[in-house]
Amino acid sequence: MNAEQAGYQAIDRICDYHVTLRDRPVLSQVEPGYLRKALPSSAPTEGEDFQLIADDYQKYIIPGLTHWQHPSFFAYFPTSSTFEGILAELYASSTSNPGFNWSVSPACTELEAVIMDWMAQLLGLDESFYNISEVGGGVIQTSASDSVLVATVAARSRYIREHPQVAMENLVLYTTTQTHSLGKKAGLILGLKVRALGVTAQDDFALRGDTLKVALEEDTNAGFHPFILIGTVGTTSSGAVDRLDEIADVAKHYPFLWLHVDAAWAGVAFVCPEYREAYQLPAINSYVDSFCTSFYKWGLIQFDGSCLWVRHRKHLTDALDITPEFLRSKHGNAGTAIDYRNWQLGLGKRFRSLKFWFVLRARGVKGFQKYISDCIKLNTKFAQSIYESELFSVVTKPSLAMTVFRLAPKSLCQLRTPELNTLNRAFYARLAARNDIAITQTDLNGVFCIRMVIGAEQTLESDVERVLALMEYEAMALLKNQWEGIGGRRGRKTDVVPFHSH
Image (cartoon, rainbow, N blue to C red):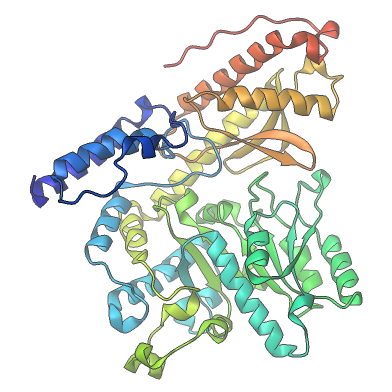
């Protein structure tokens, strides 16, 4: 097989894969170590025919994949994949280069600078975050975890410059008890104290200004130096939105407290203006120092690519600019071009902006808005079914395309939280054992629950109806099998409803 034939075959097989997604199991059924058993113990001495290699991909790799774009994938957060993005990645990899400064490939740097301004406009961000402002600006990082780590490094550097007498061990990074693990990971990597501020169900798991105020007073009185708060718009467990307006009102009395907002999933919804106020965009535009959202989650862009914007780019470059002689260039020295290596932890960077450019041009603003709106409409219908159900109850108010719920039969209303947690762990185990659905569990302040997130572009209303029927079937089967152990003596046994897949 020659290169041309291999290329055509690869495109055909990729197209076939996406066309047949609906007919595949969502989850891989392999066991740990399956691939080591299937493959030789060492690389071949002589090169092999590419047809054999391509066929082995189908034989060995595809069965070991979880299909994140499957219409019945409702776990974690979605991971986008579009044909425009696939082709962009193909083009980008065909001209492989490290892209660490303008001179090594001007198009890579310049397209990223333009695209980040396009994305800022798309989301409604303030012009102070635009690259064209030459004060703030945007850069594409690998993931939201990298965005938080970069922001934390910049915040720490700024604080130490302004307070050189402060010992590093007295610096404190603030998260909340619902912040993604990226906050703790940043603290672990940088050797920082991390304090998770409490949130409550009564506040929809959002951080409030009064909670921050108390923590700041306690820590400063104890000789500690809080220097960054990682706020969240759309937490992983519940889709909660921290009260950034209240937080900013408190933070103004602590001018060196850096406010970073992680909106990795929910921030993409800002493409629809009707969600901007409720999800705190005005506060983001007015107060925060840095903001990130990941279009690869819910924005039609292939992984990876987290968009990070900063209000003052100098804070990044002051913290991260290391320029040995061999990296110097005419335009870098003159400051006439961005050197993105000084906006990130690593030196090189992939040509990620190309896929943003391809997808934005192919779909347009209206295409992005329709995709987001369609997902939210589907979740609204699912949530309404949960509200009306005799079996399930909503744990916290639905957020955009996410609903968090649990099995809580009205006929068993006498069950307390520990008993309901046991019931729901058993219920989730039944769901997780299936290969025709992917869904994840979480814990909200001691309440075990299940989170349903809609985001696959192929998901239809019929898929949502199907998963609801599947959940009802598994719930009824569980209640029938374990009735005596969960208080059935005071309830009425109900027959299992049969489930028919399409």
